[in-house]
Image (tube, rainbow, N blue to C red):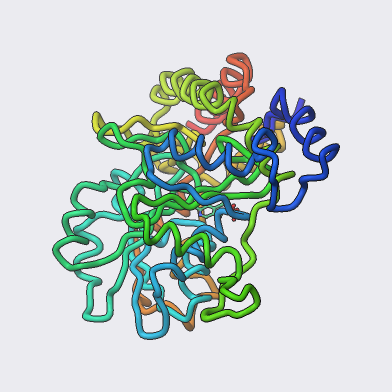
Length: 377
Ligand SMILES: Cc1ncc(COP(=O)(O)O)c(C=O)c1O
């Protein structure tokens, strides 16, 4: 049977909660019945989970990033430093605001931003940095925070893929000014599409709420500033809250997946395991490895193709580096070669990682990789 990279788990209460909001006719972003206000429940629950003072539900992780950029008033003339190894949404949020993405390399140990990488890219125009916690593994936030404080920079954390990840015992997304999470179907929890912006700053929280709802004023149709419609619907939140209730299980299952994968993968020459550190509890959203073709005997591309065609196992390339994206050639202020991001693209692969993956399915993936390596060497 074909083994996909990720299949979402339909939460037990999804039907009951969505049915309840439909029957009561509270399907938009307004709900005056506290028992059925799933947006409020989801926001309060997510704030509690992350330890953030405020959580603002939005329509996607991309919307959360765009909202964060707008809330921090980043725009033309401002530079935002972000890593090359990430999804296009990180850079799009910056570019859509008219600010300039400065795309830099990633640390080979964490696959994320580090101060050593960010510092040479700083200019008088740098206003913010956007660490991306990749595949569930976080950036070194302690030193990035020091740097940001020292240089008076804002931090937007792209924690889209890192629900459940803790760094020095604190949930990622709560270190910077705004943390952005995605509830897309393959994420640790899902509302189908959806996202959350979190912050500890009450003024920013108010601004995020205003901006996500077109900055309605007083009187209502008077607008001092242009905002967005990034409002999550109560119908979406009902599904999302059902998924949120099962988050502890999802996090435990994905960590168990990684535990089962790691000994088998560690035995394969040329395979690098997901990053690890005593400072980090990795939620292991995806089990991400790299493959050194010399030592493994096959290139990453050949492995991905064989896994799919011979063993009916899906896998995914790491992100195509942002500095090479045709869509960003005009915007990127740092058109250099970025060797780590380019190597991660050549060598990086993530393996089936659904919360409902069985131990036998994990063993099947490891066995397939072992066979490929043995045949090639
Ligand atoms: C690193 C990263 N940032 C942002 C996003 C955007 O989130 P969404 O798909 O919910 O818009 C994603 C994607 O899923 C992502 O992987």
